[in-house]
Length: 144
Image (cartoon, rainbow, N blue to C red; front, side, top):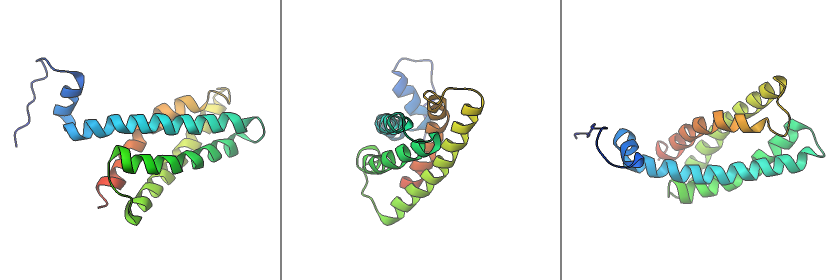
């Protein structure tokens, strides 16, 4: 198989990215971004709501758990367009276990650096979401 590597020609950014990582992966990545945005919004909204009454880490964890359920369904049926199997669900939950640890570590790092509780999740999402794509894609694509 020959891969076209002429990046100087016309074509959209999606086409150029598609040449590099494959068109199917690009479509999956964009669907992942939509699902991730919705899940992150759910997570952040619940976090902000609960932050008024409970500690930062508990509020963050509660938001994470609720968004995790939504994320599993949307990731399976929309992002990767595959049925949920026990093997995939287990891989998804393991990848999100790793992801959750990264979330909590970075959240607490940014809080220690002086970022206000309300805004501390924002840089966490910027760092951890791309890592999560790789972990979740591996869980859904490699564990067939």
